[in-house]
Structures are given as structure tokens and as C-alpha cells.
Figure 1 (cartoon, rainbow, N blue to C red):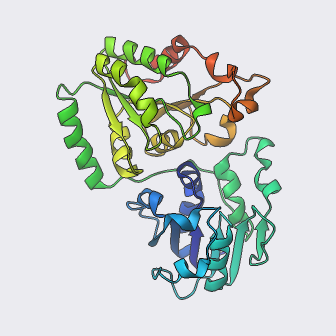
Figure 2 (cartoon, one colour):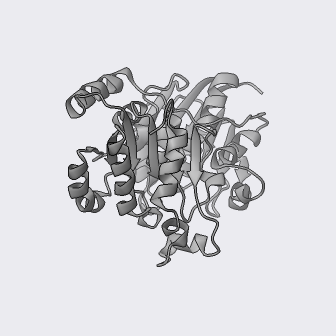
Length: 349
């Protein structure tokens, strides 16, 4: 089915937006004249270099806040980048603001992934139960987002997410790294944080891995997000002792982070947004999974991208603060170093 103009309304978390990319790219490459994307302004830079997108509509942060009690029309009327007419609107969020937007745009066909009961504005609804059927078989989050395409007859074929990096970001990364790493030693990125602190692999083990990398001729590049200032402060002394490099993202500098990770041979990371960015820009990624499940949230090709995880009985409970956290604490630094050794190109570490 060929569709002239499609609007895709994205999710409200960085990792979730990246896992929608295969669906968006499929539509742009095979099934439409125009694919426009509406996304939170915090994550709009995911799309700024994307050749598959025709129009990027960066909406205010509050638009994507599920708890925002406001008249949606007020914010919607201020955005002018929408087309006069869309054949299809795909709403992957389905909160009050995006539902109202879909109503106002009045497309020929509206598709939503349902997270509440007031969903009469959609012609096709992917129920929450259907969308969360990822536990059956090998479906990933990216494949589940593609159910919205299948709802109007698209023969989607599963692919890995791809994030495109701007030339200006690459030039910035080259300049920044020339100052921070004048000897031009090879880089390995280490991301010890995560959006949920219960996903943290112990910081001391990241430092142990970094020591091994440093001893073998690699520079550890530590990355910290806007919500990880406490973790950064706790690790600052050890990182300085290692002569490691630190990049702190204060406001989701996605393009800068992407360009830096592209300059690294490998990224070691917890299950979080940085994991998605690293793999999506083509850097080999080793992800440490705790309470979440990799077969859902790691839609990236092996062997370049791999996972370390433990199938323990209490695993899901860790997300709510399980004090033992066996799923994370049972993973030793020696195991991770061994995996890095196998994953790094050429001679390894």
C-alpha cells in the first residue's frame, strides 16, 4: 500500500524513540512520498541528520508529559510545521495531547498504540496487551512498534535502528578529542549510569574495567547523562587517577554524544539510552542488563553487539529496588573484560 503523507508521533523517552527508527525508516523508504516526525524537543536531534525524514516537528517537552494537566489545543496551535493533510497518522504515545493532535489533523487513517481507555480517535488500535506480547518468541521493542505499520497492511521486515550523525557534530568531536586525547590512543566508552538507578552495574566494576583498559593502551571515555551528577561526583576521583576522559551531557546533546561514540572502538554500558545511541550509530556495544530483558530492549545485531545478563528468579523485582540485585552484582568485572577482549577489533586488549 502506497501512502502519500504520513505523520509519526514518537514516544517520550530517548531509547524508545530510537527503537521506533526502523518503522519510520521503512515507511520513508518504501511506502510514502513524505514522512514527518513529531517528537519532544529534547530528542529532536535524533532526526536532524536523518535523510529519511521530510519534516521534523519538535514539540515542547510538556506535550510528551503524561501527567501534564492542560488544554492540549493551546500548545498544538503554536506548531506550524504540520501539513494541511495527512493520509496516515501513527501515534506511538496516545496520551491526551497527541490524541487531540490526531483529532485536529483529521487524517484518512489514524493508528494508535493504546495506553489508556479513551482511544476512539483511532481507526486502528494496537492494544497494550498486544504491544506487550514481546515476551512471546523473539519479538523486540522495534518489532512491536512495527505493529502500527502492520495495522494498515504494511509488510514490515525487522531491521536494527540506525541513528544518523551530523557532519558538524563529527567535526566537534574531532576537535574535542584532539584536546582531551592528544596522543590519539584508541578509545573505549564506559557508561556507568542509566535512567533507572536500579539498572546500575556497580561503579567500582566499571573502574576495574577501566584500569585494565588503561594498562593495555586504551583511553576510557566515561559518559554521564543529565540525571547522573551524583554518580559522576562519586567516580570523579577514580577517573582522574586513571587519566580518563569524561563527557557530561547536560541537556541530551544526542548528536555530540553520537559523534563521540562513533570515535570509540566499543561502548560498555548499562541498559539505557546510551546503549541505544551507541549501537544505532554503529559502534560495537556490550550492554549489561539487570532487571530488564535484552531480547526485548536490545534489537541490535550480534556479534558486533552483545549482552551480559543473569537469568535469576528475582530478576524483574530489581526494577523496584531489590536490595540483593543478583542480576547485576553476580556479573564480575573479569567476565566483562574477557568479553570486551573478544569484541574489540584486531588484536583486542
